[in-house]
Structures are given as structure tokens and as C-alpha cells.
Image (cartoon, rainbow, N blue to C red; front, side, top):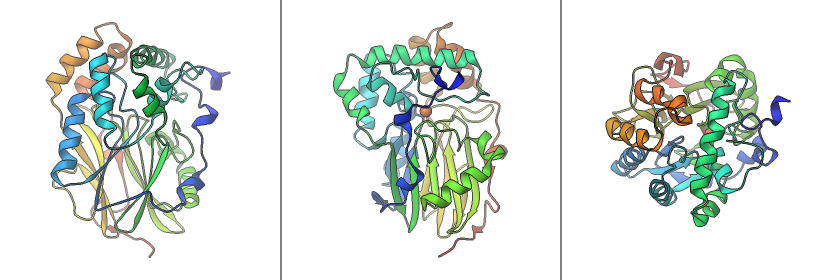
Length: 319
Ligand SMILES: [Fe+2]
């Protein structure tokens, strides 16, 4: 049965109720960066830290900061640096923290992702877990990270998770599911008392608005901070939520007095590609699945990611 195959399943312990987000904020920020899917790219990590530092913003890593960092020195450095900040665990951190639970990479891949890719993800995870075994302290720390967080920015309630509002590895907030089944996301947002839901995990970015009883709500998926997200581009993306717009945003939407934006994570591409090729040479599972995307981006364009009624104007929002 498909749901029990490694890489396809969504383990029970990955799940939570959308009601967990209907709680007092865990943190308040003036300016908030959310960087999911760093995927072990140390140059993207530097770039994200730099973005946040420049405006003294709060930084949240919402999971999968590990993936390509199978080199032990890199693994140590990535985790030590990320764990100085607020962090949630993704499926990668959850799976490397423990031994094989039968979930494979824990990605919970939907039917539109091919079997070859799923198999290679399981192999990447196996290699990364082997590296992680050398760092029991890191395994304990990443395994103990929370799965969700509620932040407040200028009165907006921001729900942050790795996958969606119900699962660490959920795909309901993927660009595909938001296009095909927006009603499910709308129902979940209404139940979670959240104005902005920030997620990652599904590898492609999207920002989409929804009418809920609380007013307009947004789902913002940053795609990947550590990999290109658009055709013929070589930068990652982070989500930024603040009262003052960023001069660097690629696109965004306004919700009352607050802007929710996709900000490019401009890392040193050549240095990253050289590092990637060292760790994952031609023929390796990561090279087969990801090298093309690292070099020239996925087949996806900015226009496909931006799905708000009034991207440049103010969206209506209930008081
Ligand atoms: Fe993920």
C-alpha cells in the first residue's frame, strides 16, 4: 500500500491538530525572517544570517536545514549555527535524530513525485543519518525541536511549521494542492485562528490569499532557502514579515499594516556548486535528483507563485 512505503508515508508522530495554533504567541517580532529548506547549503546560511542581521530581525528556521550536508565538518557547522536561533524540525531533522522508522526520508511525497526521486531521497537520508550518528548531541538537539510555532508581528498572528497545519510533512500548502484544493487550506486556516501561515517542505514557493471569518489570511511557502526556486535563477527564498517593506523583495502582499514578502537569498552559487559536487559526485542520488535544479532552477515561474488578489495594494482584513 502506497502510504506505508518509505518516503511516501506520513508517520503518526508527524501529525498535530490545526487547533495547536490557536494559542498565545510564542514570540513577538518587529521584523521576522522565516527560512525553511536550507538543505545544508552553508553559503545560503551565511546569506540568510546576513539578511536578518542587517535589519536586526528575528530569524526562524522552519526545518530541513540539513540535507546535502553529509560531510561531517559541514554537518557540525550547519547545526551549531542554526541552533543558535529559533528552529523547528523538519522531516529531515526528525528522521536523522532517530534510527529508521520505516518513513524513509519522511517527505510524505504525493503521487506526482516519481518513484525514482523518492528512492533517491531515501538514499540521501540514509547517508546523512550515517553522518549524524557521529554527533549524538546534534541528534538529540534536533530531535527535541518543536514542530510548530506561533509568532506575532504587528498584531498579525503567524503560524509557522515545516509542512502544513496538520503535519510536519504535509503537502496541503504545496503550490499544487493550493491550486487544486484551496478549500481545504481555507478550512484549516479558519480553525487555526491564524492570519499568515508560513511553511516550506514542498520545495516550490507560493503566496496565496484566502477569505476566512477572521478576514483575509495568507499561506506563504518559501520553497527553499538553499536552492533556486524559479526557472533560470540561482538564489533561494526566505519569507519576511514586517511593517516596513524590504527593498529586496521579489514579490509580496500586504495584510493590513504588515507586508509578507519573498526575499531572495543570494548565496555564492559557484562556491556552493563546487562544494555540492565534492560531497555528491556525478551519479550520486543527490546529483541525479538536484544538480539540475541547483544549476538552472525548477520549471516554475514567479507569476505562478504569486496568487493574491491585490499584490501591491492593501488586502481587506477584519479588525
Ligand atoms: Fe521537508
